[in-house]
Every structure is written in structure tokens, then in C-alpha cells.
Length: 466
View (spheres, rainbow, N blue to C red):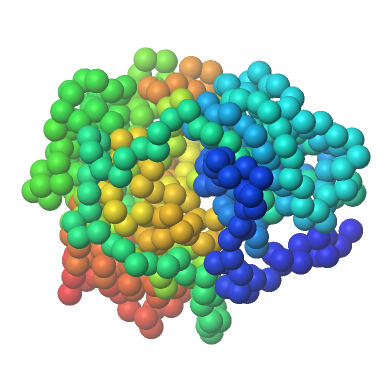
């Protein structure tokens, strides 16, 4: 069945350019004291129709993006408000594929749900619902679709009063950028077509293991040796609990490009009690996470963040905006936990993407994540307007056969996460970013695209600036 009529605002990418800056303005006249609590908060859904309809698109404040589900019942969309809140109003802006029967539910923990609104006769369109309840999590739980398609929401807005005071912009745990990057408007432009076409916007940073089985984490537990679970480190050879930007810049690296002194680390993989280390150079991609790859800027020195979480559930990892292919080995792909068995002689692989939109103000924040955000349908949110390279880990461990005892030091496979502490030589990173990402090339660590050799390379044969 042709789905095009129900995607009239999303089908062409040009719609992003034309409407990307439009915001849904909430009418709060009846609830003047209440606040829009859901916008920009983490969202999770029971399913996703395709890559253009993620859960987060329903809480991004944009009327040109949407969440769409698979074509079955029931389906749900959940937003995490970050703290317990008193909920007074919910607004839903449906696409043509709407819910005829659904409930609005609240929960303190994302497990036990209380229904605060229920209907079996909804007709779609724009709905404003007066509700009374409390909880950290709020979800739309659809039990009957109004059409033969899925559930499709442009916006899911939750209003009320939060129990916490908004966090400060600076103070303990905040590392300020000096200078800050301000005045940036997220680009909604679509680069013009080229011949030959642009198919990739990336370069590789190939880095081997530099330190093993070290219970340090200079981002999460700075100055506290042994406070973390075991990590495998790549890149900078000096990374430890007392690492600073200055110490990284003074260190050496296991990366092919000597200008990349960045510290990269991830939880150690264990087979029983035996540590398993990646063998040889691992692939760390630097890509464009936004449609307008020309707008991507290099990382500022000292930017650091954590990707993923050791406390993730399987559903959170599976639906994470940075999860690409999950785990694979042999012919087994797209696993959200480590497979029970891998073909003998194969390797366990994982791919996971980092956020690529920066707030321009902070090199770090207390949760090591809030200063970074994922693009929404290819455009950075206004809260994090600066497009920076999108890192993608592609790790491979030499372990196969019975995988029953294979796990990370942080837990099950879906606890996989990684840390980045940028210490690139600024001129080298700028050259690779400009030549490869902004230039629309598929580059190796030299900044050379073998499919477009006439474009040359950013670095010389020693992986240094010419």
C-alpha cells in the first residue's frame, strides 16, 4: 500500500529545509502556571516505522518531524521527564495515521503505569487533554489504530510542574568552553547534488589498544584511581584517572595519525574472568550526523562525553538514537545483546554512534552528556546548534563459539558504552574535517578517498600535515 499520502510533510528532504525552523507553539492560556516539560527529553517507543520517524521526533518541538510506529496494535510512545512531575495537560498532534483508542499513562519508574486518560472514540487531529496525575514517565499507549497504518505523532507535549529546579549552567561538574561558540543557527540546508554523487562524509581514526584492564575513568571518576569498572583504552597511552587535556596533549598515541592524542575507552570484554582485547587497529569513524555535512565543525580541544550507559536496558540500547547495528558475528546481525553463539573463528563486532550536536558552551557537564545531543532527522536541535563530527565506534573482539560467559565489565551486552576525551592536534583535525566531512568524501586515516583519488589527501604518507 502506498504510504506517501500519510507522509506529506516528510517525504522530500527539502521539507526539512523549508520547515526545519518551525516550532510548535503551545497554547498555555488555560494553564498559564504550567510548563512544557517534555520537549527535548529522552523518548522511547515500542517500535519505529523507519529511520525518518524516531521516537524523539515527537518531542522535538518541530512540526515537520514525527514518530511513526509499525502497523500493529498495541504501540506506545514514552517520554522521560527526568524527575517526578505533576501532570495537568497533554497535547497530541496526530498525522493522518492516528489512534482511535488510546490511554495516557504515568509512571514513577517506567514499569508500573497509572492511566490518567482513556478514550475509544478519538478522531485524530490536534487534541488537548486535561489530565491529573504525577510521574517521571508519561506515555501514549495505543490499543486501536484509526487507519490501516501505524500510529503517527508530530508532537507529544506534556505540561505540568516539575519537582526539581532546572540545573545551573555552570558550577561543579561543568567545564566551560573558552571561547564559547554562540550565535549558531542549526543548518536546515540540503547540499546540492554532485557528480559523482556524495555518498559518504567521513574519515577514519584507526587506533589500537593502548592500555588494558584499568579500573579508571577520568571523565566519570576524575582523580579517583580504581573507582570504575575495568576499561580498555585506545588512542592516548597516558590515559588514567588523573588525565587532563594537558596530559593528553603531552602524551603519545596508538592511533595511526600521530596528531590524534584523544583518549578513547570502553568497558573491558570478559570471557568468564578472562579479559578479551580487540586485536589490531580498531575503526573509529568521524562522520557527519547532519544532512548539511558542510556545517560540521571540528571538536574544540578538551571536549569530552560519554556515549550510552552501563545501566541501559535492552530496549533502551535497541532504541538508542546512536545504536546502528548492535552486535554481530558471522551471519548473525542486529543483536541487542551479545549472541549466545558465534560461528567458530568469527569475531564479535559492535557499532554504536555518538551524539554530534554540541551546545557550544560546555566541554563537559555533570552527567557528561547534557552538553551533547543527537540530530533529529538530520538537523541539530536549537538547544545544541553546533554540528560536530559524529563518532562511530566499530569494535571487533576475537571471541567465538559458545558465548554464554561473554560479557562486559559493566554487565550485559546492552551495557556497552564508551568515552571520548578530545585531544586532537587542532590543525590536523580541522584539515580532516574540512577535506573529508565538509568535502563529502569517504576517507581513510590519511584523508584519502580511493573512489575519488583526484581529490587528493589531507595528510601525507606519515599521516601528518604536508
